[in-house]
Image (cartoon, rainbow, N blue to C red; front, side, top):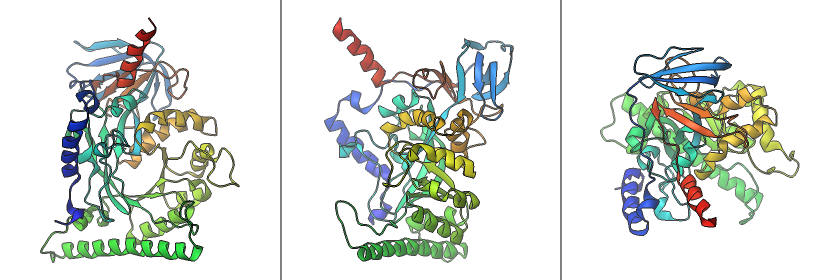
Length: 438
């Protein structure tokens, strides 16, 4: 069997077996029980509702029935048998959405047996991150308790990495967690810089030659896949290649392209590539996106900006460029979402959005960057990302401004109308060690 045809599900099974030898039960699964399917109407009262779609509504109630938002308004009447949750003065937000991360794929990055984030070889379009998603990860409840109800996970790799899925963060297994399958094909774009790395410096000519070789290799992979697609359409394929079979949706326009790139030259190459195949393009990373923001907007390229924190990448850049970039993208008209590409770091994404407010985004724009903008990029805006009648009742209550370190306190959460346990290992350890000084 060729390596590229090995499914992550096999790797997951092997990982689980190895992990059971070296870790206690507590390290393998968290203690929180997923919420039960909604059985009765729930009326949330007295809230400041950040609808995203229709502004901020004060002293407002929200009625949830059968996992959906049934009504929004003042002084709503509770249906017969409804559960009334008085949340006077608190803030209600759509469930936050974290894009492009590896939550549930990695438990401890330094322990190989708990890292199921990638496959071997350059061509893995048939790899689907969802099958390696560990719904029992100890990390997930910590992300959830900061306001995130959904996460788009992707497999990493050296070139054609595989396909991502949007997962809801309160489930028994990956099958329960999948909200939208095959949200995009992820490609790690070849380097475009002519300078060798700090650890392995090389002459510029040699670096350029290596870059050109890898780009040509990537283009050849897609040319081979296109030939396979054309043959499939003509009924001429008498065997199945799992790699190219998984890319049929890409050429038919159903599978968006997500290119992981930071350098402006990489992004420009990717835009030409997307035009060649007439596909929707989203840039993941986008460190230099501020440099070509107008070009990205003109080509309807979305950006999942993964560098909202950090030092300047070049000596001549503004010291706060990482924080200013979201506002630059907003002003140019780019559809962008904020992200922290990793797994543990995702919990701090809500504060990255708050930091962007200090550098040019309005609170409403910052909220959109982790709600409706993210939902649009993940192809789920019809059901997620805003508080509107008919949409999923995936909602988060914070005691104050959810983006403010001082007032952020997530106290209540629904995912598809199910009440979510907001406990996590960090909170449990906090409670435990409070007693140490007694």
